[in-house]
Amino acid sequence: MTKPRLVVASIAAGVLALSAFAQAEVIQRGHIRVSFEGKLTPHVLPRHGTAPIRVAVGAKIDPTDSGSPPQLRRISISINRNGRFEPNGLPVCRLNQIQPSTTEGALEACRGSLVGQGQFSAKVLLSEQAPFPSDGRIYAFNGRVGGRPAILAHVYGSKPIPTSTTLPFVITRSKGTFGTVLRASLPRVTGKWGYVTGLTMTLGRSFVYRGRRHSYLSAGCPAPAGFPGAVFPLVRASFSFDKRTLSKTLVRSCQARG
Image 1 (cartoon, rainbow, N blue to C red):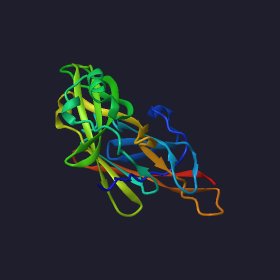
Image 2 (cartoon, rainbow, N blue to C red):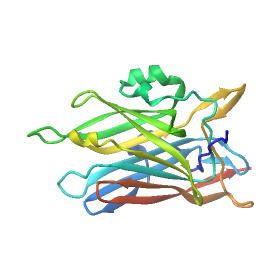
Image 3 (tube, one colour):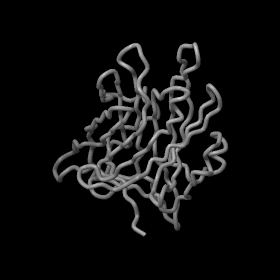
Image 4 (cartoon, rainbow, N blue to C red):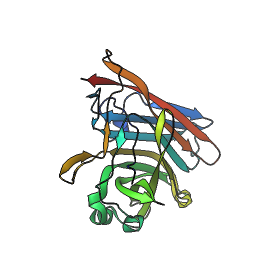
């Protein structure tokens, strides 16, 4: 079976929370504003070959007026082609193992498939009350959906009632600058209790398979010979709402070793 590859390249140090990101790109259209950031760590990577990396992405959604933003329906993340995604050797988590489930239940069922974690935030809507903030943890597991590799992002929140949701980010290959695309659709049921205001997730995992150490994500710095580093389009993100889609490309840099 052909090993799936994820295109990634290196930039400055990755972090878990969106608040720790610097130089976030802002996308604005109508009364929707999305602040988006993506980083990899480490900043210095080999000029030839690849090394283990961690990828951090985050988005914050705000209205530009006093109203509520429309419902986020789909997320698409297209990643630069310089790098590798290697899930072979990791256990595969099945959707029915973690949905529905608490965070503890999901970890108990699929801890061996864990490839990342993060946070989500939302505003909860209750009758005759102002929206109030709610947040929770995201745990990402190596999985498959419809025969394709996927990242299963398990989201669990306790307000207004305990709620479990799993977002399957299906991974597909693409041609051109961005060689791998991760796509997820949010269930429409989320609109009944509120709206998403932010998501962050960091991916990265080292593991042993057939006596050798592997990395879930690895990359090199695509700097030409004689140049100390490179500037390149790291990721293109699209956020689709009920009637419009906002997209942005992040351009970043890396330092080459060797």
